[in-house]
Image (cartoon, rainbow, N blue to C red; front, top):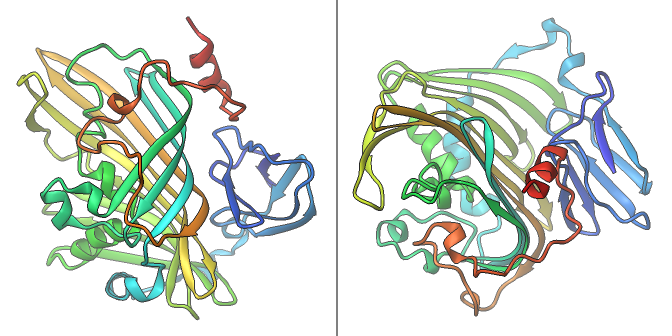
Length: 364
């Protein structure tokens, strides 16, 4: 199935397809593998009208909502800060916060100096204590108490990164590697941001459809030189954020000094990035269906500048209530992710890669 914009014909990345409570997302080419026998299909993407299909079709065109809104209909919204504070404070009442197990698809792609340097696609089992990030456990490096993962089927894995101690420093060496799996981590940072004395908060209602309001926002801190822009979909009846896409720009922030595994000092900075979270309602609570984080960075080492990007997606395909604490087999979150992959473990399957990703995998 291919999902595209009904106006300009461009592929829609990260469109959500829901079939019998199983979740799928389109790749960078707007494509997703769906059974031709599938029925009762829901297709959704942020800022697009939802489409319900009785049967499988090869092409789905989504109509953009925001692009059709006249300028006079867009109006200021001065309650962004209070809304963020409220959702963060009531998180446990709005979202599902009991032990959970997900069959999920994990995808991570790194680039180094404008070329793909690492690609990993895996089926994983993901267990969470309550679908929330817990800083107290992170400070103790006790990740297993609130999140565990089992990389039980590696679909694709290839890395051409130099075998240096810098591998993975862009994401895997950061607390964001764990934090960006959980929406409450992003809300925690936004809650702190809007409480800054110098924070400038702007919001606009750019679409309203029944109980769903789409609100664009811009948050800026002159002191910290950071700008967050994006939009979220807010359900007025349930008082919950169901979808968020946010870009952060900290290109004016100076790089910081750090040390790699070989005790070599270098300077590092993530200049800008993006987070995306998507949720769907099951009974009276909201469950995660997608968590995305990506960013651009540079490293200064030995009088050389290296640029790169990281892109990590988790699709929470199927949800199960959990009455156990954890998984039998689990990776070590204290290690970089690929150090948890046994040699010879790759089992290629029919995962739909983008054309660029397929060329990378097939190149020698």
